[in-house]
Amino acid sequence: MTVNPKTPGTRRRRTAAVLGVGALLLGSLYGLGPGAATASSHREAPLIAADPAVDNTDLYAFVSPERPGYVTFIANWQPFSEPNGGPNFYPFATDATYHIKIDNDGDAKPDAEFRWRFKNVDKRGSSTFLYNNGPVTSLDDENLLFRQTYSLESSFGGADFKTRVQGAPVAPSRVGAASMPDYQTLRDQAVQTLPGGWKIFAGQADDPFFLDLNVFDLLYGGDLSETGQDTVAGYNVNTIALQVPFKDVALGADAGRNPVIGVWSTTERNRVRITGGGQSGGKVQVSRLGNPLINEVIVPAGLKDTFNANPPVRDAKIPALVKRVLEPEVPKLIEAIYKIPAPATPRNDLSEIFLTGITTKANGPIKADLNSQLDNADVNPSKFQPAEVLRLNLSVPVTGRPNRLGVLAGDLQGFPNGRRLTDDVVDIELQALVGAAQTGKLVDALAAGDAVDDNDQQFGAEFPYVALPNGVPVNSAGAVQKAAAGTPAKPSGLTGDATPADRPDTVPVAYMTGASGLAVVIALASLFVFLRRRRRTVATAPRPYTDQDPTLRL
Image (cartoon, rainbow, N blue to C red):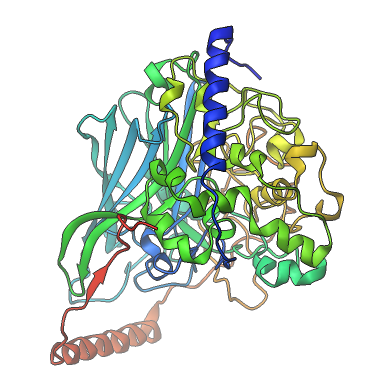
């Protein structure tokens, strides 16, 4: 990898800062009983589980493999979107703002921020319940009765937000083969290039996360017998993707001197939402994501909503959160169930992976100035704050054959140095938790991990990389999920170790035609109008929705 040369004086300042961070972390310990995780990166906390439209599922950040000098950010929301989920399907929330934030000087505050707002264009009115009333061949097709647009704003160095685009089209939810016979065209039309070389995309996509969620059944049945099933296969998510030049996110616009950035995504809603419309109280953060699986298997249940509501700058001030990194629960569970000894605590190796970034002072064999902002030449070490964010070194070259286990397998471009779509973060974090980053060797007893090594769909060779959304219902009897025809094969710049076998194409669905189809539509429409009129006669009191208060102190 390429690293920045450091003078002895700079190294001394960085060493002092690392030692200071270590003292802060060690001084933050205090007792806390064990908690239980609730799910994957999807539905990870009690409050956000009830609000899927703003639930961050995953965040990715990587150097663009086909476009030198550019970095790509991909953030996903709306977990477990079943393709058969009509008639409203899965729009972005119009009363929320979606954010990607970058810290390049290590103070755990955003130095570059990108903000998305969505609007509905709904032509259905009182005439129909249909999302579309015929085949949709373009984003402006008159048969597409419900669509969304968005605006993108950006702020740099704390300046006011500037609008970069308004009215950009969102790729719609994928209704089915008859309704959207060529979804690739709709995807392509939703990808746009802005001044400055930015590329943007928002719309539905296949969920790129892959894992077996039976981990919550006593860690795969207590004997690793419950592995190998990709729990999120066949489901979709709502994706926002952004590609920008290094200079737009690097400290001082100089990625040569300052290549490391920290990335996280958030969603904000008004503090109070009223059923039937209306909101008040100003925006509050209701969801947050940096490194994968942190709020799921590191943060205990009683802290999950608080973690979602707090900014990274407060992480080191929450002793219970710091303790869960330095004394994680998972190794203790593995020791109890599989008799694999838990590494000694405090886990300073995990504090580097999740809170400070990896430097040459790591406890284990990863001897590289890898992805701490302390390695940026122009960072003031006295202002550095440990924080849970996804850190990426922009100077690490793109590898032609990525290893799914990333840094642990010697592939310094992989997780936890950023996150590529093909990085097997479940297996990586499992190995890290049981000490692989300390010894430099994988724990053989857990080498197979969850036995889900890659995504069920193939990723694209170019921006926005994510696979097309699934069009076959997850609960179809005997249906085998696969990306639709036209999905590009995995490129060498994104591929993992394993490649899925070819699978049958998406099952076609006949569109309603003729008298029988028309009769069904008329009958359903009549029922819809009847129920709508009946609902108007029932008085309902508005119910307030109050989000987690981010000022909550422990």
